[in-house]
Length: 255
Image (cartoon, rainbow, N blue to C red; front, side, top):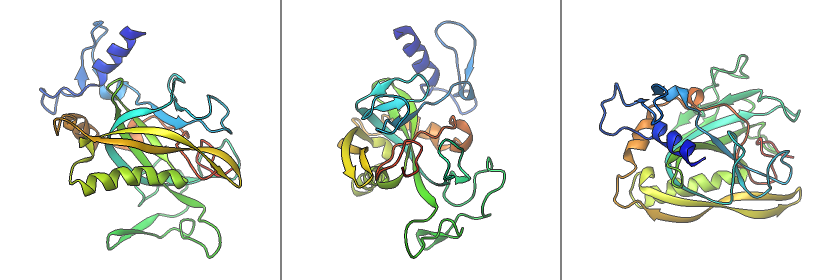
């Protein structure tokens, strides 16, 4: 198992001494041939909720091998806004989704609208009727945030989606970087889970337990540069697992 971890780490670690044209090709230590960036899946972590079909409630679970963690020590590399409109039927794919918060994903064959939101001033204003807040209740198409981060314990990247009240967690990370006038990749954060109770039952909410500055500053810059140029919608394995709060299942919809 240790050899596998070292191999995976070697495949994904940025080659900071290489130029742009060769940095995505790595020769693994077992001489099995070159490994290209799109040959390797980036895992997606989800919070296992009491309503989840698999896993131990109150843990972060990888969609690749089912491994579970009670906490994650991470470096945030990228935070990307999106939207998702779920069907009322549990276990089905989203009716519509966006990976940038502005336009429907190209993977959606029949989007509800050609435009999700428009930029007004420095805010996103919903343009799709399913994204507009109604007088009562919530819109059917909800905000999402995608966190791309470096797992410090394995030195490998992962992706995690946030919905509902869990969105506050990624907003805290972004706000702390802004307040300290540092890049996202110059923060090292510990994510833990806190049990919450609502009218719909118990659920686990991801929280920022601690934040430390990277020392020295810029030590994770190569990872940030790599993921800044990737298309999140096509480079990461699709999956419905997300970190949610406010009484939601692990696919992002309310239960």
